[in-house]
Length: 473
Image 1 (spheres, rainbow, N blue to C red):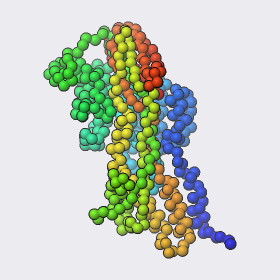
Image 2 (image 1 turned 120 degrees about the vertical axis):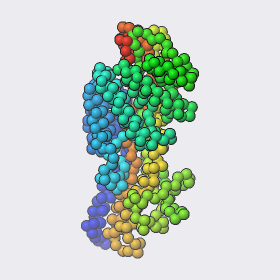
Image 3 (image 1 turned 90 degrees about the horizontal axis):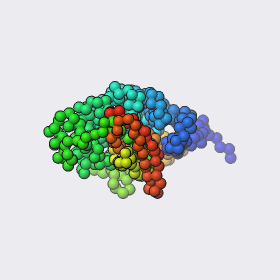
Image 4 (image 1 turned 60 degrees about the vertical axis):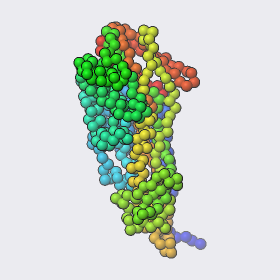
């Protein structure tokens, strides 16, 4: 028997054969693995080569990730000017891509969110300010560092407006305000330093057990508030916060060499993986809803997403597989650290927990995004049904086209697993008084197996506030 196929059928079959090449099952992490591994191993030369030839990172939709990864890599190599060039470009990219274009929305609906322009997670945007400020301080550009501190205020305002300052959303970033205070203090602007420290402290105080996204209010922050209040002559404020903190209002005397703040960037940021959740479309109380098997979630169909209400018939629609990202934590490696200076040992305090922030904001977003993503799947399913036609039709072309569309929908459905993956899992800080002139410090970090890593830090006490950051992966 000789089979004959129409041109449309042949094209559909060719499309079916090629689809596995178009839609890789690999996650974003898997596709940048060589670059990521090189960074973790401290082989920055190889990392540079890998990022320069990675087509995925160079795709226009991934420009933000390419720029921040290049900025971070340059920072790790102490190329601070170059690092800030990349971060400034990332800032400009965010400014010019504040919201999704019509084309972006269409791509997200017809293909998947991974094909949309990546605009960074909220905490990733705050981290740009952290690295830019450090770069400026290391370059001795304190005026530029202060400008970056002011930009933290603008970013904080945007974040606050985004969530109407709700307590149950990531509407503020306490660490960025702490960093802002440190920058002002390093620039000898004690008044603004106090305001920043106080604003950071108030975030913790407004939350249960003085904890905010996995971080308990640091003792050092309490001292920073009291010290700068006292230095400004705000004695009533110092007394008020002293009572809240249970600490003396008057600060201790300091050494004449100034202080060093060490930022310990520990571990690796969590990576996004794909999780598949099955939902069923049901009609209840006159409306259509997607419900999961456990009954824990129920999302109404969003007809504004392009769903034709008249074509929604439950008999034709069964289950829907939602591919959604979830964060997988990476091995923290080192779990404790300390710095010894002049025979006095000081321990680090956690100032930012990116692991907790990342997981929390994804969970907070799920309720809003899942309904839209499921409605997008419904649009695809209705298109399949429309192409297929009635079951009693004997049109082979329509059946083959419908089959091709079904396969396309199946293979194209994937979660957006992109994120800035060379960020640390946590940032811890330690503030050390310095003597005038040479100071030799010993930084020690320990892992859970009892292994320790020791680093020597030489710093010249100049009477001011200095910064030093170190990364352990």
